[in-house]
Image (cartoon, rainbow, N blue to C red; front, side, top):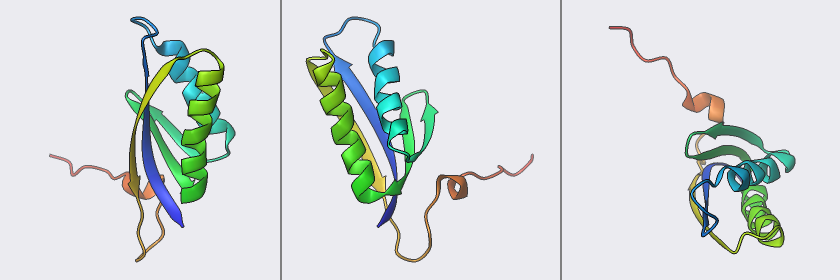
Length: 97
C-alpha cells in the first residue's frame, strides 16, 4: 500500500542543539530510497507503507546505536484507495490576490 507520511524525530537529553541527530535521522530515512522532503520540523515521505514503518524503526535503531539515549517520534500517515498518492500532488499554487 502506498502512503504519505510526516516523520518528526525528537532526540531527548542530548543538549540544546539536536542538529546532529536530526540530520542523521533524515539521512537514515533518505538512504531507504523513499521519496523525501526535509522541512523545518520533520521529513515528508512517500512510498510503500511497510517501507515507511521500517524507516522509522531504522532511525531509532541507528540513533540509539550511535549513543542517543532517548527518542520520541511523531508520525502522521495518510493513505487513499480512490487515487494514487504523492507528495507532488499535495502541492498547489495558491490563488493570486
